[in-house]
Amino acid sequence: MWRWLRGIRERRDAQAAEHVDAVHAECIDNPSLVLVRVVKVYQKARRGTKAIVVHEDDGRPQDTWFERMRPRVGSYYLVQRCSAWGPHNSNPDTLYVHWIGAHLTRRMVKAANRHHRRWEKAGYRASAHGR
Image (cartoon, rainbow, N blue to C red; front, side, top):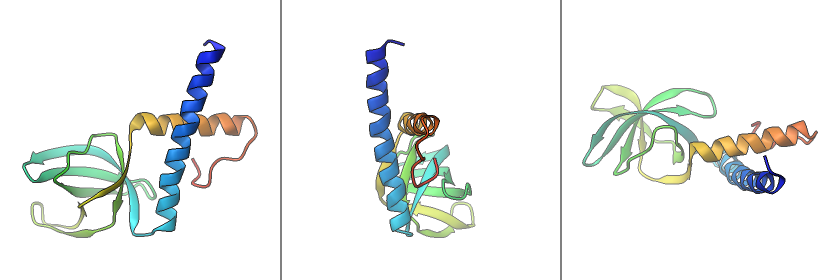
């Protein structure tokens, strides 16, 4: 790869890592927030979307209702923890999402991970969230 092109990519990766690290720091500072990744959207309705998400902190899958939102599979969302009984599937642990604090695309997370690997390879310590 050309040297100038690699420099552009490294700067973009660093910006993505800064954004991803800020979102992880927000999760640490505020325990009522959680970062989730959408793995499956199984129903779209007029008033929202039903999806399966995976919690990034512990890898736990959870049924989720995104009110008046259309989440994308593979995207990461910073949401408030608000679990309750789900009447559509009788699940007592359904996550209800009424707002999204931050949105991270798959591409952004991959760029941040690439940046963190580059820094570890150079001998620097990885960021605080362990990626």
